[in-house]
Amino acid sequence: MSTNQKKKTDTMSFRLDKDILDKIRKESESQGVSLNVLANKIFSRYVDWDMFEPKVGMVPIAKPIVSALFEKLSEQETVELAKQIGKSIVSDIATFMKGSMDIDSFVSWFVTRMKISDFEMNHTVKNSKHTYIIKHDLGYNWSLYHKTVLELIFNDVLGKKIDFKIKDRMMELSFER
Image (tube, rainbow, N blue to C red; front, top):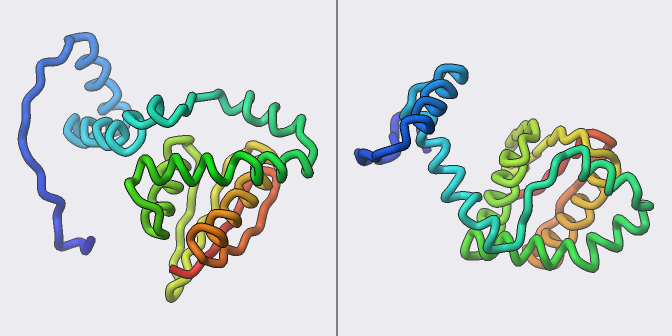
C-alpha cells in the first residue's frame, strides 16, 4: 500500500466495562498511541490470530518452557519432530487460518505468528528476494525445528527454494517471491 493510499475505516461505538476501558486508556498512554490505534491493534490481533487459536488447537506457552523443552531434544529428535508432525500441522494451521496455501498467505501467516510471539524481526527486500531475520532467544533446536519445517513447506508444498542460517538466538531465511 503506498503512502498516499489509506485503508478504509468505519465508525462504530461500543459499551465497555469501565475497568476494561480504564486499562485500555492506560495502555494507550503507556504506548504513546491513541485509543483508536490501540483498539485497531487489539481487533486486528483478534481477527488475524486469537479467534483461530482454540479452533486449531494452539495453546500459549511461556518462552522459558519452550526453550527448556527444545533444549532436552537432540538435533536428530528435533528434525524428526519437524518432519513427522511439524510440517503437516503448520501447513494445516496456516491453511485454516488464511483460507488458502500459497506463498503470500503462508508468509503472511508466518510473519503474524512471529509478531504474536513477540519476536524481533527485520524484513528486507532486494529485487525479488525477501530476507527475514528473526531474533527469538529460544535456542539452537528451536531454530533447527523451524528451519526443517519451513524447508519442507517451501519445497514440498509451495514449490519454492528457501535458504537458512540458524543460530542459538536467531534465524535468517531468504526466498524469492
